[in-house]
Image (tube, rainbow, N blue to C red):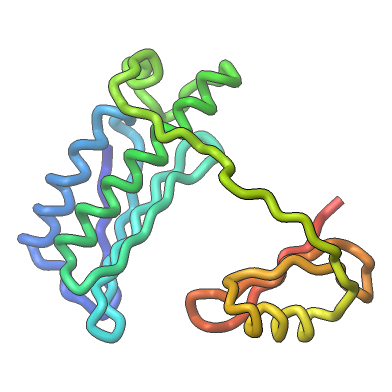
Length: 175
């Protein structure tokens, strides 16, 4: 696995690169040697942030973590990627797909514990027609990160969500 490390507002020292490469070596057992992992380090308001992106056969394995300590963020992001790999492996095996960038040994073993996905609560509610601005306002009033509504202009179900940069996003269906 090739690891490409870059930094924004942070100097990527040799020691930091060594730690990242050492931690990501744990993931090499899953991927073929030509797989490329892109690591981006950044600092924002004294918070250390790491993003890891690994493109695999039309999909992207991606995780990001933010901590006061970069080394803690590195540990957490590697754990998060391992959990994603377990889910992705199950999806590949269930659909009998080719592994692409994954080693065949990884696809044939059950050495990782799978986290079970279960829905613990179901909600039903009437969806009131409204515009995007009103939906954002309702979301803020409720204190949620997203809000489902029927767009009064298109009559389609849409979702507005709060982005990490404190702006809003809109999800619309595409047919």
